[in-house]
Figure (cartoon, one colour):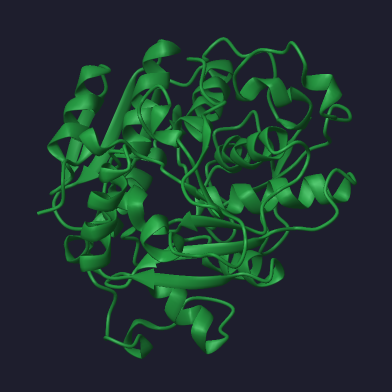
Length: 371
């Protein structure tokens, strides 16, 4: 049986409880579990064409909440850069990979209600999968969230709470609600089941590339859920001898909201105090077109920084003008991607010295073209 463990102080909790954070330090959980068995390329033939084909390495099995998520195309864009089209997921973003895990776990725990907070995509994904699981759901989003994303949340039947202020204020409101008895907090930040869903992104790369991985994997980083999932997968594949080296993780942030990049450049193991950031306190989400990664104080900052360093990777930042140009450039190549989802293409699309995969992780219909 998997169990929650706090990476900071070792506190444990049973995953059948609705305890959404470590009761001692209020930090996010990690997950301890034993893989059900070995995985090999040959064993995958004929399996279900979704992320559940990697069932041996997932903390849940035999789902009923699935919408067929996963197995998105990997398409070469240049001689060295390929794109994984995660905007083709059921709710049009990569967040489906983790949301299905949270909704399936919640369905088994039968809470009175499910609460989530999001800048948009995670909220739409949780709303959709809760609808699939027949679970009542409330999603908290910051004011200024893309109208198309809030429309999608409502369409799935979730109750929408629009919070005055930024992403941090939204998270605080949701966490206050999550403390109520009988509430399951479907947090893509605090609940590690989400990370074990996003790790399937890399398992798919490994399968599609015939049992290998590119030299580098670029990911946009706000709360770091895709990056930490990628780190989990590369560690698991390497430990089982399924890859002989781990690719560098290239973390991309918007220059206007880049607290992790600032910490990384100073060699810090955690976020810098706000008064030590290069431009003063962290900028609000409104300062960048990349709303999905506009996170001033990500709770898993230490783990994100450590994962990038351990992989031999680095942090890159992109300007608002680079984001605008990258969105148009991808559209001219046939890919209509939202502004957050083009950040990695803006950062590494011109690389020619090594192979790299970028995630196109949200559909352009979610935000429209950048102004």
